[in-house]
Amino acid sequence: MIDIDLKYKIPLIGKYNRRVIKCPHCDYDMMSKMFQNTRGFADAYIGQVQIVECSKCFEPYYHHVNETNYEVFLEIVAAGENKFFNT
Image 1 (cartoon, rainbow, N blue to C red):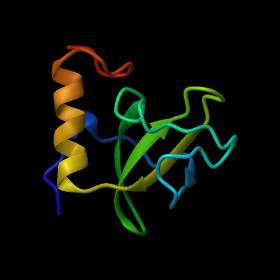
Image 2: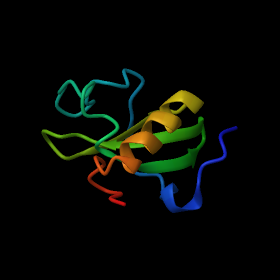
Image 3: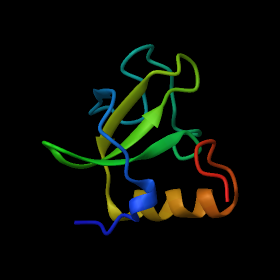
């Protein structure tokens, strides 16, 4: 289990997306923008998840998160490149 900072924990919202990088609502490829558009992290019935907002349709979705994804997210936040968490 990842020790996610409480300031990045939010309520579970959106639709589960096992494809991870493609928006389940509009099929937009989020590969290059996923961490910049991460709204936060939540505990779900499937475990810990990363909640992302699509850059095209602005609908939220979530997928499993791992330690590496969380570390990349923290780097993006530290660089001031996340639209929800600017330091």
